Length: 260
Image (tube, rainbow, N blue to C red; front, side, top):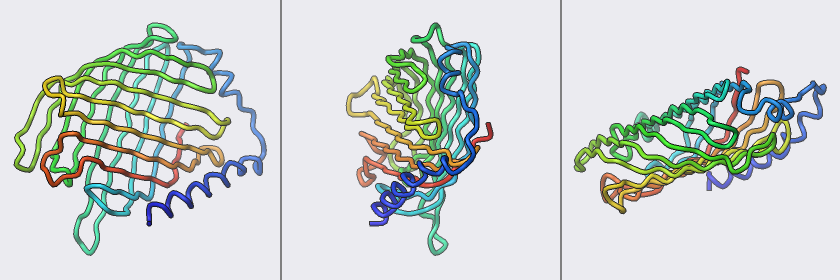
């Protein structure tokens, strides 16, 4: 019930915010045109700090606060990006959620459609009995669509995965594959939709796989301030223990500040 109300009110708020920018003085903005003219050699940078109210379901049924960050820099066909999330909540002095995750990705564009990448990730989640999961992999990406308004790319790669569990399951190290889909659509100069999805199968057993989906709506209110609606789905085909649920869902509604 809380989750449904959160989605409804934020969608209403988001729709209202689409009309906000017209109330402020118009400023010259050729961002979309610049993307088209710079190609792979142009410079792009992002430093977004986010604070949100979070509704979680799955292994943690709570409403709590969330903080996250997203950093990105690209120049001359080379880019590096980092995004990290931290969740913490307690009720009556008892911790009911504490987890964190982060990923660092570096990429090199061979041309406007082809690129290679190096990806490192880590995750900690007490309520999944996961002390630490780390991975390091390489891969290739191809942009199916690339224009100032829309971008769609697919990625494929391979990596080494390490898992340290706190329950009865033994720690594990194995090679995994990766199939990723990234999509970005600009509704206007102030509103955009972003999704990042990936399928991560173990190369040593078909039953051991994970699926992660992230869907984000961002509306810039004025200058560097934005409102954000974010949904993250995490599915683990082989959880640490039988009583741990396969699917974790988190819905975020909050504000963000972009320093550039």
